[in-house]
Amino acid sequence: MTFTEAVGQRIKAQRKKREWTFARLAKEVGLSVSHVSQLEKGDRTFNVIVLHWFAKVFEMSVSALLADIEREVSPGAGGAPGHKAD
Image 1 (cartoon, rainbow, N blue to C red):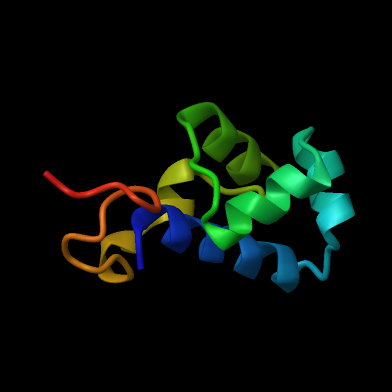
Image 2 (cartoon, rainbow, N blue to C red):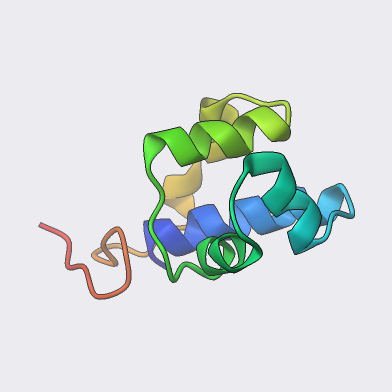
């Protein structure tokens, strides 16, 4: 699993924990439903600002959102689909 996919899974888990729809989460973070869906699937990369928006609506820090995420990332998987690690 890539870093981007792992972050997407974290976002999805937090959304489901709150029993929110894509539409509800999209409204909360100010993104389109399509954008949120692509982020959850790992089809789109995150930037620090977007991570902050998600953490804020989930009432957690970015650090908490990303805690121990390296355990979920496959060695050499890279940061995004099609990206090779250095």
